[in-house]
Length: 246
Image (tube, rainbow, N blue to C red; front, side, top):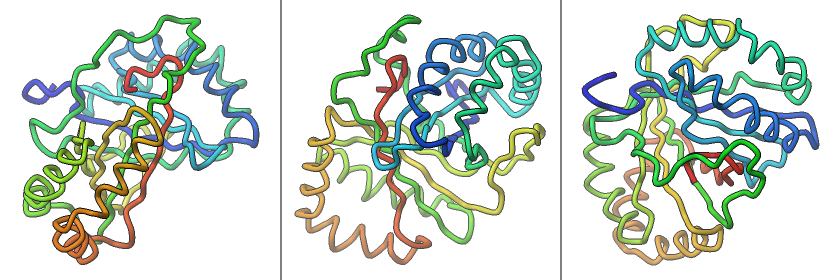
């Protein structure tokens, strides 16, 4: 673990599923696939339904480092827990290759400790109205210290002032993927930050509040439009019943 960070290496996994199969995969994942991974040193940070895509399942998995990632993945995907559920899980999926390998931007920007324990196996009620939002910035070169400074100087304070302080800020991890059976996207440069809201309506009100902020309109957005490739991608994520991040 790098200097005390909880999750020095992170995967952001966006799965495209067969129509109508997301509930099946969520039930399978929550009931059978969380604890076996965590027992091997792969903490499941959170798992979600994308509110804007009824056939997308999104989850976040952490690792202590790239070497332990390789060992844990080989053990899990070669082991009994996955083999017992693989056919059922794979039958729900169309594409599982939209995966970003990430690391915290600095020692203070990793995921914080959870607010509460994970709900037990068998929990079936999702958190009431809870919403996690992941914002993805893309550009044509690696994100550097200058961009991180811009984010901390302008984006973070504005988000905090409007009720949505960033929980974690991550950027591309360029280490080789030594487990090619699970591909990750290469040749991309991303900066990803997470925040959460009490409800989708709170998120909508936050967006309206940002639009009323002169600093956001006059300083932040022009800088982002210059620095980024296209518009940011925003994932509105509803936690599953057993998601730790909620």
